[in-house]
Amino acid sequence: MSSPRSGPDRCPGALQVHVAADGPLARVRLPGGLITAPQIQVLADAAHTLGNGEIELTSRGNLQLRAVADPGEFARRIEDAGLLPSTTHERVRNILASPLSGRIGGHVDVRPLVTALDTRLCADPALAALPGRILFTLDDGRGDLSGLRGDAGVHALDDGRLALILAGADTGARLTTDTAVDTLLDAARIFGEIRGDAWRLHELPDGPATVLARLGLDHADPIALPDAVDGGPIGWLDQPDGRVTLAAGLAFGTLPARLAEFLAAVDHPLVITPWRSILIPDLDEGVAEQVVRVLAPMGLIFDAASPYLQVSACTGRPGCAKSLADVRSDAQAAIAAGEIPAGERRHWSGCERRCGRPRGEITDVVATADGYRVENTGS
Image (cartoon, rainbow, N blue to C red; front, side):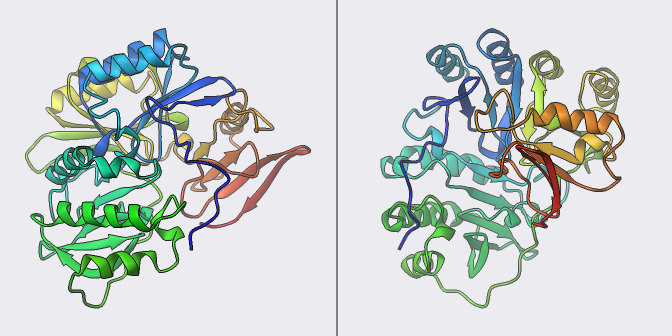
């Protein structure tokens, strides 16, 4: 039995946009969070000429533009840039991978799995019918992604094997890098067959057990997986090969188009993380120093203690018709007034839906008709 739905899945994409109070919202999927310098330049140009001048980072490592004046033109531009490899599968390309994999830490480099999974996902016509909320997670063993409760994923073990994860829990089945993509796609197909009107595997009673049984894999006792982490790395990260990864946050996960143009000028691929931050990997030290010197004053946050990294917020007014307040302006005023206790994470919501709320221990600041209500509700 699946959970009841009042209508079809309207999760936005680049072709199926969401019409918000401030206009059409278009979302671009980035499997593994990967985007090239020319591609971020295309999005910066689109934000300037078609949108509101900003690019928003999402909790799935994707990017979106608001108030898109011409969605058809936007889709054409990103297709030309290689950001829309499949018009039929674009909303199901939700693939998270440990952002530092293959560069710093982890047991297995999962980057090749991202490419293989995305390519084969798009090649299977049956998988185009999956809901836009499906999520694949590829955790390289450091434990940064498995706690995000993906529908199907792997978690690398210290012996090089991969634990099969369904609905965010270890199944006890063990895979190799050669069998992982086949198994994840098979799991997705089975979910598509049994889901009814469910959007996520965890919504189905016995859903993970049913998928595992139909996969026919041997399995032993599952292991406990780490909880969701509060946030990703921030700052200067030394790679074992002598190069540097810069990890930067953004206030409210929003990237101004002008700053995006400067990022494109660095001429290195970027990684967008599920913590609404940006990694610039494989930099020489001199280049990394110059990036920090130029881009920190423009809005990239390299200080892990910044209060802007403690505070998140939904869209609020004027972008959301349901919101009761301009929560981002109010949150920014609270930061400027020094009202955020050190080390306390806060999420500002324009209504009781609490959209965009991160996992973990959070103090909720919820707009009501009578002002804000503050409460600590945990994870």
